[in-house]
Image (cartoon, rainbow, N blue to C red):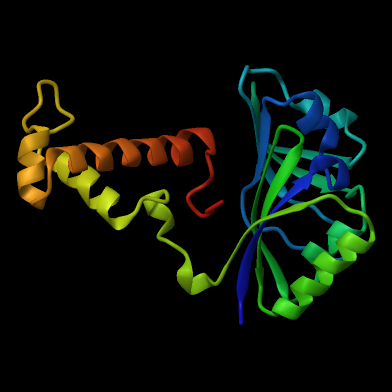
Length: 222
């Protein structure tokens, strides 16, 4: 059975430790899924600094970066093709094992969050056991089967939260001035205005967390 696992890995055990640890406001994310090409790891990475600090000098100083090819550089980051020498061989198996596919990764604050599709769960278990024996630090955040994944376009909203937010928007609840009220929305759904208010509040909280705080790409669900 296929499995999708979300891992949290310190950058010191993988790559770009200097970039992500010394500059915690810098974030990195592959532009597309990453696999090993021969014996090298050369991902196309999007990097960004929150305070407009140039990231290229940090890349050139990072010991895990052996080659830099700017693709679409900007003042605060941009897209780069990087030749990487991962800091430990154990994590290289993520990119070399045919039964494992790295769906995406997100680096910030000295760590990477990596999402992996395992077509063979035994291969994944073997890899994790190998990491533990080698003393590697990592956290397993989530394990799900692909069919149980929520629609990533919904940013983790429940069905009731999603339909309440969309209905509120379509009825002008967010307009200035408002075209509808909490009471009118409660009448549409046939529940109390307190329940509608709670759905909206929790939906807003989830949207802010997933769209603004965690900032994953739409193809990822961390």
